[in-house]
Length: 231
Image (cartoon, rainbow, N blue to C red; front, side, top):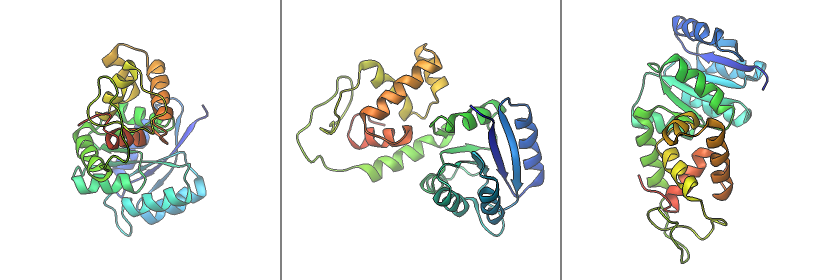
């Protein structure tokens, strides 16, 4: 993979400097620009076409949520990770709805931040564990739909499965899916199941394909909607 180009967006210069210092020592990652508010972020994103934007929420002129929505609408290949001090449920969900593929709090470790940046480039979604449950609860509430046809359960899963699943998940894939629902990264799932990160990535790809999902977040929502897993 080529160098991951990152745009930093935060109204506090000291925060941007700190992030830039952290990422300076992360192999394969380069900070290509900094913005102090959402309007500037939109302009720089169009000019620089970064791979990843680290986006604050509360900023002057334009906040992080509308800026995220605009960037994702005009530059769908640019990934946005919200990095904020706010863990309020409404802020979290609005950020995800705006198109952010990650939501981290500013007390996250340097390792977690770097892993999140690399992860979104591989189709992963990284949500801080302290807010993951709120996001999944809301997705479940919005995704509940009455079953349209008779269905069958997958072994080891709860609720009603959807007949649209072309191929059933294997027992190991079901284990991985349950950990995806918990918001764990591939590395964390691998540690939990004593498997390599590459092996987990293969399982996640298989799950996404079988559930006819677009990415891992969509796979979790689909699994919740079809009753393949429960929170």
